[in-house]
Image (tube, rainbow, N blue to C red; front, side, top):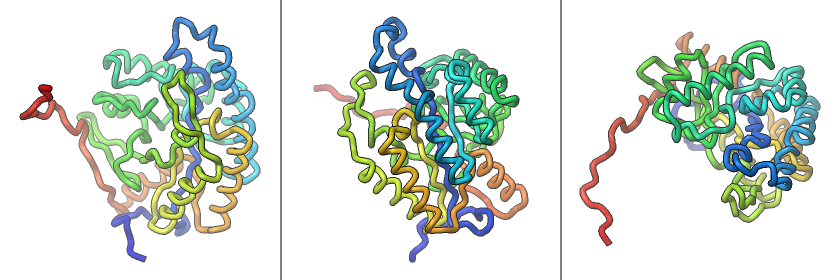
Length: 304
């Protein structure tokens, strides 16, 4: 078959691809972010979001435990502090807890000073709960700002997974250094497949798990064929629901039956890729941020 990734990284043990079922464990952070003045009366929405820590996270952890795999969840600092039992369960099972803001803030809509405060608050919460600071970051809502990269480098992060510029890891260059990017894109996001919540302006038709898995499985098959990275952007309160969790079980079984798949945390993937670079075994593509330091001049503007 024609190779479609020109420079795939070598995966451990000669694996055909790397896989991480990474989740954004948001709980009610979105509720309090978008409805700060009347969150207390939105009981139905809150109950849906609380399904995550109370039902979905234990279910997902039991699935991962069954298959003997370690995976990653990105968690806002407020959620880390609010649901310590769920976090402890994940940590005790050896899963990675990554940074996901404090209250799921869109960091490209706040000042650089506020972004720093959000970053520090999330780091402190995760370090207190896990015993060490996070090394991985996923920007809430993908709202990676022009300041995010340099802040992550300054605070010692080892990788980011907010962007979608490649099918394999690549390097981001900023004014303060370099950072590994582990890309993930919308085809591996469960939000457009399953979420219909008017409060979040999401009115897509809910797909069956079978339809959703067609998309996720196709992305996996291509990653397996061409040496890519399969990294999901799933949410416990969404994909942890019963029928969807069962579909996840079947997808993992499919992946394992196909063979030559490396299941790993995003931290492990970053460490492996970093090692191949330092040993001179592989050279990734790099991009410098920000892409556009100044607005692009428009020669015509809407006038009617």
